[in-house]
Image 1: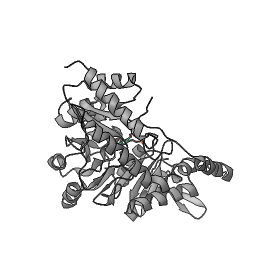
Image 2: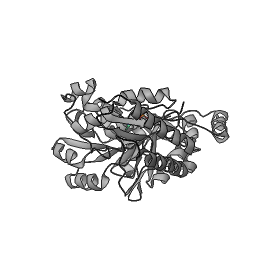
Image 3: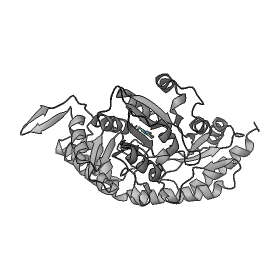
Image 4: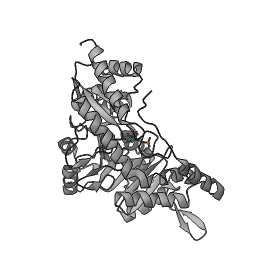
Length: 371
Ligand SMILES: Cc1ncc(COP(=O)(O)O)c(C=O)c1O
C-alpha cells in the first residue's frame, strides 16, 4: 500500500534518543531548548516555545493573549477542527470565515466581513501547508489592530514572498504529529518575535510558574503543555534536512501535478507564484460529477491510500451547535470538504510511486459510473 505519510528515521534518531535516556533527564530540558532554537532560527524568528501538540500551542497563544469568555475569534472554516477547538476551549465565541476555492485558504474578504469590536484575534490556517494570503491578511489586521495567529500546523518549511511560515502575524503554531513532514510522535511549537508573549507562554505552559532561584513561584493559573526531551531529540535531528525534505516533496508534487493534468475532473490545490508549498499533504478537488468517497475506495483497491482533504468546521455537529451554523452556510468550505481528496506524498516515495498514484487515480476516475 502506498501510504499517505510514512515517518522514517535513521540511526541518528535512535542515537539522539539513547543520549536523552542516558542523561536521565526525560521531561522538558536542554534538548527542548535546542529544538526550540533550531526551529525558531529555521523560521527566522526569535522564539520557539515547544508544546505537546499544535492544539495546545494554539490554546497557549490564545491564553497568553488573554482571550476568553466575551471575546470573539475569527477562524478559517476549512481546516482540521483543532483550530476551532482551541478557541472554544478558551470559552471565546468562534466566528467562521469561508475559504478561497482554488487555494483552500481563508478568503481575506470573509475575515473582513466578520471583524467586530469584540474580535480579539484571527486564526488563519496554512491549509495542507500552503501559506494563507498573508499579503492581504496582515495589513488588514494591522489596520484594525487585531492580532493575527497562524495555524501553521502543516506549514513548516513553507514560505510566502521568501518569508517562512510561522513568521507571519503575532505567532505561528506548528504540529509535529506523524502525518507532518517533521515529526516528534506528538508535539507542537509556537514561534514568535514577541519577547513578552514568548515569556508568558513559557510560564503558562509550565503550570504558570516563574523560576526564582531554586524554587518556582506560581504567578498565574497555567497548564502542563511541556514537550519532553525525548520528543525534542527526535525533532532536532530532522531540522538540518528539512529544507531538502521540502525540495523533495515539491519535486514529487510537481511530477504528480503534471500527470494529473491528463486526468479529467481532477484539479490540484492552486499554489500562487509567490508561495512555496511544503506539501504536508497533496490534495486535489474532484469535479461534482465524480464521487470522492467512491474514488477513495477505488484507489484503496489499487493499493493507494487516500482520504478526504479536511473538514468544514461549520458543518460538524460540535461547531454547528457552538456557532449556530448549518451545513452549507459557508458554501466554498462546504464544497471543499465534500470534494477534496488527499493523495500519498512524502519524501519516502520514488518517482515511480508517484506515477503509480497518478495511474491509479486515472483508472479510478475512468471506472466510476457517471453521477
Ligand atoms: C490545520 C491544523 N491545525 C491543528 C492541527 C492539530 O495538530 P496536533 O495534532 O499537533 O494537535 C492539525 C492536525 O492535523 C491541523 O491540520
